[in-house]
Length: 114
View 1 (cartoon, rainbow, N blue to C red):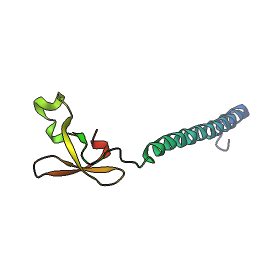
View 2 (spheres, rainbow, N blue to C red):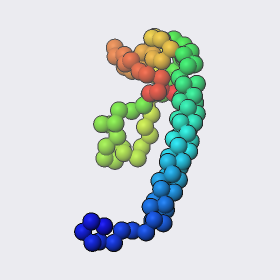
View 3 (tube, helix red, strand yellow):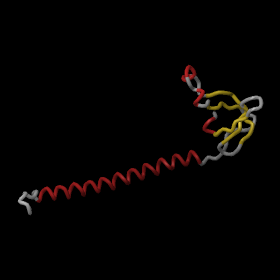
View 4 (cartoon, one colour):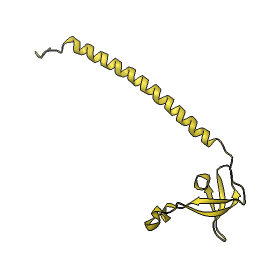
């Protein structure tokens, strides 16, 4: 070299070029694989969300998910569902209003009832 240091042999440069070419190929393969996996997951998620039909009707009884703050101490390992409560209103494809007390109602997403 310019300072009298030996230059690496040409084979090192060839090996590095080969390595970088392989890494580029692996990067493209991994990117394609991840894109396909993402599309598959998105399709499954969207299929579950497209239903849009509320399975509950006014007058039915449902269990509701207990709030996390009530799952403390000795009740921590207890049931996470409470009820049954009466469905007072069907608010749309993803929510209901449940009668949770004498004069108390609570709006709930379908993820919070069964």
